[in-house]
Length: 215
Image (cartoon, rainbow, N blue to C red; front, side, top):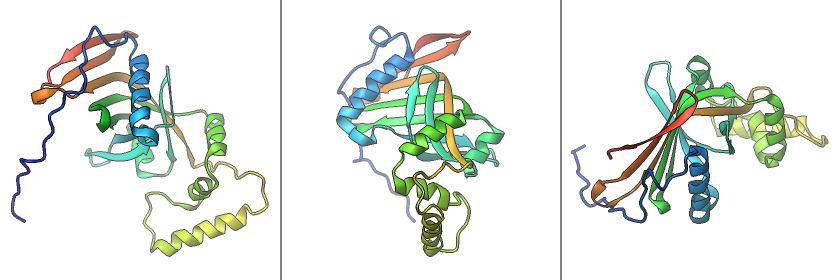
């Protein structure tokens, strides 16, 4: 394959600006402000993020997951505890999250430590999931090789039969939430001529320190 340059694929940003003086002293409050802006423009995709973890080969891996909760203690997502990312987090309990809100010309990067949420919280969230998603959590041997699509569909039917007639489908023990407790949060606002605004919050001795970085 010949090397191909993509010179025409470029957009000059300039929708908004970001300064140290304009941001909230608390990064979680600043995140909430931007997240609400994203909800207005991006709707039900505002909570889409890239979760990056460290693989066994020491090569970072990223994949799309959904943010389900955020509060003062951090950011919560859910997954299968037997998945590749869960195995990576077990060995290296640190990760980063990247949000890209294209309509707002904004990006947020968050890094910190990872811990499992209380099983009771996972139980409560699992009950709120659509029926198909609850069945899917039981049926999918996530990150394991399967012979074909039919295998997965047969597993779904088996799970449906297993819980047929039950009022509630319980949460499988191998599925639940993770909490990312941030130590750094970066807010990026697109600006003209690639001179973007980058405001970074670092947690130092229990307090957030705000800095501006060059783009």
